[in-house]
Amino acid sequence: MSGAWLPQIVLRAASTLVSSGRRADWMEEWLSELWYIPRRKALRFCFGAFRDAWWLRRHDADCRRRRPFLESPLACLAFLAAVAVMGCCVVLSVPGPGRGPWPAHFALRDIPAGCSTTLLLSVFMLPAIAPLGPRPTYRYATSFACRLRRGAFFALKVALAQPILFCLLMVWVWIAPFAPFAPFFLFAGCLMTLRWILADQSRRCPVCLRRLGNPVRIGAPSQTFLAWYGDESICSRGHGLLQDPEISASYSARQWLDLDASWRAFHSEPAGVRQP
Amino acid sequence: MILQAIGAGYIYGYTVMEATGLPSGTVYPALRRLEREQLIRSQWERQAIADAALRPPRKYFKLTADGGTALETSRQRYPLLAKLEPKQEVHKA
Image (cartoon, rainbow over all chains, first blue to last red; front, side):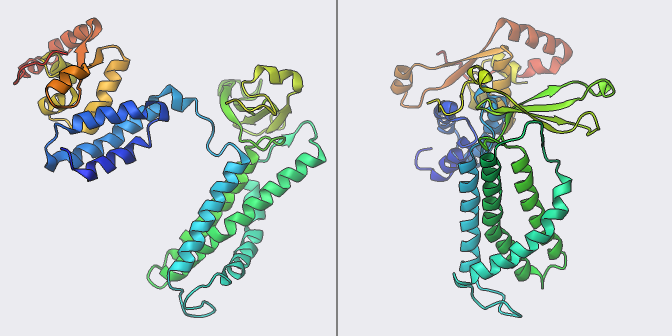
């Protein structure tokens, strides 16, 4: 089977699903099996690797111990910036609608104007979406610096989302003549993007802005009149716990519990110290 | 079927696929699951043997005692499984 490059590319693509610690072994195993497969069956054989890799990912202890997606605030901003750049590239590389206020081809200087339009749209949509996602109520007040950092982080995320929304808007303008349902996709896309920003913000530690992880189940629905039940997530640096009841009630609101410095010794990654 | 195939002497992934007629996306995850449940165990062939045969090393599977018991139970429940016989020489690791 040597020389068959396409099946090997498929295997490489599937290997990205496997945890890095097991990837080399997994790849060796599949390449060894691929050697026996007749060329005409090789591609179909390799597509099965996705299912195997996915199974391994779901059941691999390494993967289950993984940190939450985009845990670090910088990673989150970098991800949004990358998607924003991709959105800008899409808008700049394809011809514009060329009708109404839209030019026949977008230039770089048109992007800020387009983003301003979507920012206006976001300003109207955000207050409507905000009540859909519960915000943590902080039992202990965080410092002004923490609140400022949270605000700046949120503003940056909203700003980086604008090129993405602009790209969605352009897609809508392009396909609107052919697809009467296009406005729904635009609306759903905007809604999901802004909803994700809000949800992400509410799942972050108010002190270090890292995404909370290691959720544990607390209580049981049968005890709803005796105590709250829901999930409790913890900051990986030991700043506190977010208690998220499944049913909000007067005695069980979503709340953040600050942990003082004495708790940080119990965490694998104490504040200010990065484990290798 | 996969336990029966391994028990019948189809002891590496490709031959299990050939014997059972199942696609790769079914056989390999199933082999991992059986191994996790300790019904089979795997062992890589020695590199020297593979080099001598001018091919990559194979990962061989073998039934464990629990796997043998599970296979026997399955055979009693599904007698047609016993018709799956080895078609080729079994390679030893």
